[in-house]
Image (tube, rainbow, N blue to C red):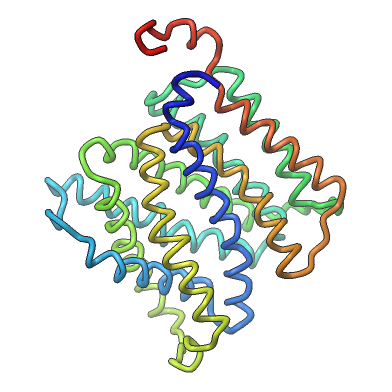
Length: 307
């Protein structure tokens, strides 16, 4: 482990833990869907809970320095919230869950391409791309879990690709704003604009959510988990690790999502884990760990006083 990596070790651990928590959200959402909540309702409720819990922590300015930055904050709420969840969940109507999982898993690779090739905000060598492809191959083995069923569905697959691209846009926007605004403010704006931009959706698809439904133990427990742990805490920590590690290295930890989802589904839902899925897990861990290592050329350029 290099000196730079050692110095950023808390942020690497934070990124891995955040990705792991997000990997469990698929199971929580599945349990809430079984209780009668729609994907849009789940997203609004978890963001609303997170926003309300953040209000006592709000200090200083409410709005951004100028209207352009405020507009970018609104885009964060759309790309990291309302539009992302709507595209991903709508895609599940038209295509298989395995298709969605595989395409969403390509987000780190797409982020590397966008941040490096398009935005020119971070550097990325050939090895980083190779590691990303190795991890993506491991994701495929974990997602299929011994059952290779992949049927192309243009509408659903394009919607999923759109969801992945919105998260890429979210990562680039965070990079632009994190130098001028604290993670807490960015996180609060994401929740606010995520809720506001999704509310018009309910004009076309009204929801009937009762207090009795929300007070059910399964519903209350999972909403608290999604709202506090997966939203309030994880969005804040994710914006923080992007600030310190950069979007490319932080996003590579998202490859851990399928591993955690697989393990959680095994213990909570009784889904089986095959040897092929374990092989995929090994590939993901290898790819992610190698991606976080700095190339030897970069290490040799490190000033002596930093060693």
